[in-house]
Length: 105
Image (cartoon, rainbow, N blue to C red; front, side):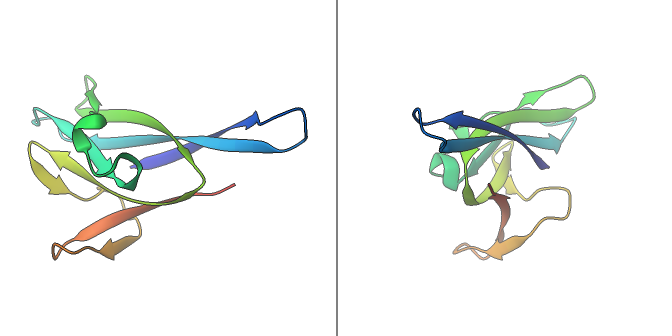
């Protein structure tokens, strides 16, 4: 599951700002040894974004992302998996599907 919270930072003394949103990724896999998330935001290098397991078996990570549309998947013990909750998906070049998260202003 990916959820958002917003943080806008002023770019200068003007009234413009750049917004980054904190995206919270969550995957329930109590038996997993390792869960990571890969996507457009990290060049599909899932090892750059490992999730941390809590006592209830949920794996979590937070990323700050700029506005845009991103594709992603979870890498669970070496096997790519989609989000567990209903999300928009698009076909990929490997015959499976990528999840979509839209980070909007």
